[in-house]
Image (cartoon, rainbow, N blue to C red):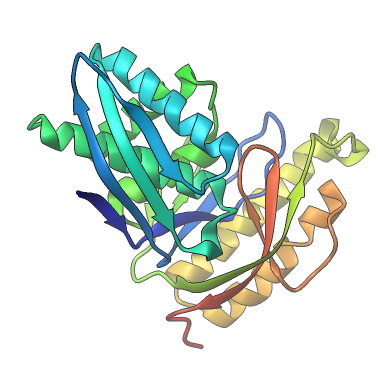
Amino acid sequence: MRIREIRNVPINYLAIPIKDRWNPIIVLFTNHKIEISGYISVSDSCTQSIDSSLPRALLRYLRNFLNALSSELNIDLCYRLRITFDKEIKDLRSSLYVSISQSLLDHVLKSAGGKIDPVDMVKSLSTIDRLINIKSQYIEALRLAFVLNKSLIFRRIDEYIELKDPIVIAKLNIKKVYKIKDPQNFILQGDLGDLLTKLIGYSIINIAHDLLERKYRDFIEKVNYVNRFWSVIYGLPVTKKHYIYDEWGRVILADLIYENLNF
């Protein structure tokens, strides 16, 4: 049985993490596909299995999520799932985790005749995430975009802004995956760190305004400049390709083709 076919997968398109600091995030969608089939139900005698080529670490997160969901709802969730996805997004682990886990919770609620406000849904999901030690504004941003089915600008301590008629990523060609650690960089310390954080934040806000005003040529040019912060902070190569932060210390380098980017 098909549980859900997902054709709008959220991506943290523009987000540069700096430890203990909060900057805006721009979330856009790609129309690559994820398909979830099988069953998930409440039962006393259980089968729990996921058949998928997802990375082992991501499968573990999904199982932990379902276990925590069972505990929070005080039920025994049984499932036999098959998950397939377009190979182009196989390395976007945070996007896959959010899209799949959220779809499974939505299916459980609908099966029980329940309904929940989108913002409350994100709060509930974030509670479950924290139970399995996922405490991230980048996951929260993806969750909110997915539940609303809207591209948006997000910052944990501020209101989000929906992007009307946003650009869509039609094709994503991943070139490399980098593992990063918290940088020991003097420019992140003290007043210099504060200034750099503000510079990145204001740059992303400025780019977001270009998106809102459909100034797409300016948008692309400025995104290329902001991507250079990855080199300044984390020592990644300067490139005209695009960097995507993927949570869990992972940064994706990719070529992007946009569906509706008209200059």
